[in-house]
Image 1 (cartoon, helix red, strand yellow):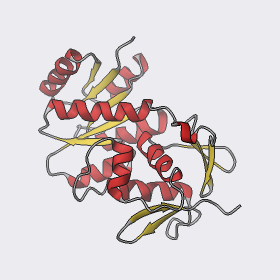
Image 2 (tube, helix red, strand yellow):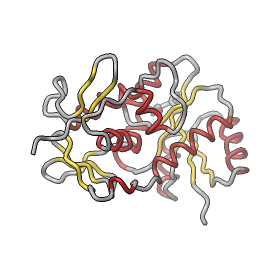
Image 3 (cartoon, helix red, strand yellow):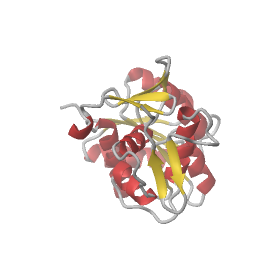
Image 4 (cartoon, one colour):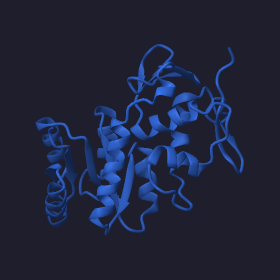
Length: 235
């Protein structure tokens, strides 16, 4: 079986070398890039499963490149941010990153996050949803087999693997309030972090895609102090 390809985009040669050696020792095929131009060249050479993308690149920064990747490629994106840059982390999630990790990081934590993103990308549909492959949600349809979101005219709307898993979790529990930590457990495969607002960020992004009026959502309702709830359309 071919090794999973990971593309590391970072302008620090020491970090690139460290990740190449560490991930290579754990069975990954690692490609390296120091800039946006080098990243595009690697993408043309071979498509990676996941991109580890430094947010603080000179020239085209990581947010710009993450937006470019999300619009053109189906792959996982893990943003690498500064230790205290909460704003950068939020911005990374808003442009479509699947996860983030702060520098300085333990390579073991990075590998755990990498494995989690890969699981979400590769995860097959569960038996309980196989009989409902196309589900109406808001003004869109979610195809559970192809993992795509389309509008009423059949035009595909880009979503991340995390956003798909979030929608799938809500659809599997119609008219049921799911707390943030329940949704994190269902979609991120790791323990809930106190004050983690990534679910809120992704719900906001999804509402812009799904709802006729995102300011007054009908498909994904907020239950104050409790969480979120999917409301199926009336038949």
